[in-house]
Length: 455
Image 1 (cartoon, rainbow, N blue to C red):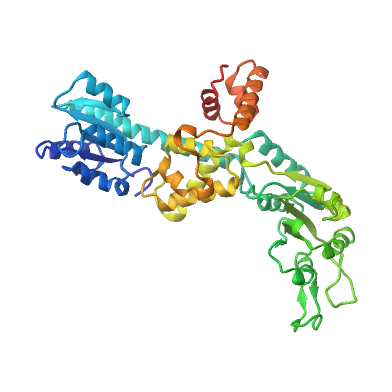
Image 2 (cartoon, helix red, strand yellow; image 1 turned 135 degrees about the vertical axis):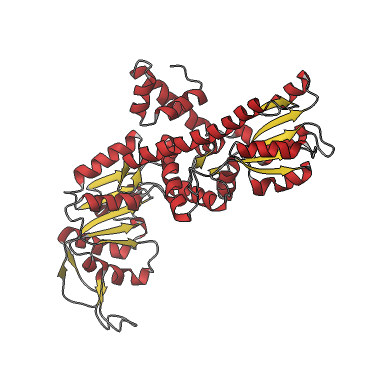
């Protein structure tokens, strides 16, 4: 079954054995997958596994009232839309039902035209989410640059800089927090460079044993040290005429830094245990999440090596500085994971989107992807819910309770100020302001509502 063909799920709870099959047949005719229950307690026990899109609940039942069931569904499955029905309608109970979060309140005997309209609304809401994901995935594809997705102005500027400098830069230093995608930028520089068909090799400076570091980079001759039973080609030689990516360059041992500097400046390396130098032609791209200039000032990193590496220096912004990209990143991740898992995952509920937008993502894009991946693997539904996202978040990344689920005050203030400034500069034109900020028009309207900004 394709994602588009997946049917919405409806749970029906009514203790009247005569009414239940009638409503069940009608709902199936409306193209819903239906699960019907005479017992409210049995229905609630199955709620977590069933994960319905909507529930049709009788108001007066012997075990639990419909209001109690509505509240339990709201607490357990907040994305499920609940319709209450009763044979004893009153204004007071209708008001109570709406206040408790019911989608609507129907009197028995049921008006099936009205019920059909409500179920059509549930389906259309789901379709809108699917269309929105498709649109955001299309935007993500249009703004994708060598595996990096970024519609925000800061990312578009980064892409332009890479295109401009990649054919000429021999050394590049990429800075940014963990999880921002530094290796993707390094690969983009290689792909946009003069030798895209040559080797691209990666060395994680934080993962290599210090005593073997020199051999790893420059190689060794046979008998150079205990255990060197054969000669070995180092990464510099192996990457000749290509690109060598040194990740976490701040972890490079101090004794090796002058040798790396010589290799970069003069294009010469010397295998461990050898008296002869070899010429190499390698582009070196380094990445770090540390402040190397500050480390150089403290004597913990060679300043001459820093300045040699940073002839071209690029900085990747953290995800919290481009929150408008989250819908596009999420859409791209869901599309990839849906194909990989072979499951019809079509999008997120609005509540799930709000959870993603409200979190500050200390692990950046990597953490966001991991969260979406876990949610896709754990969820049994085509649409990821607020609960799916919360369950998929790491313990450290659990957002604040619902009433407090907002970004830090300082971030709110900064974002609001940015939006107000863009609106002033564009004369109150929301579309132009959204373009200037590098966010979608939909995201712009979200921010205007969230921060109570008047154009």
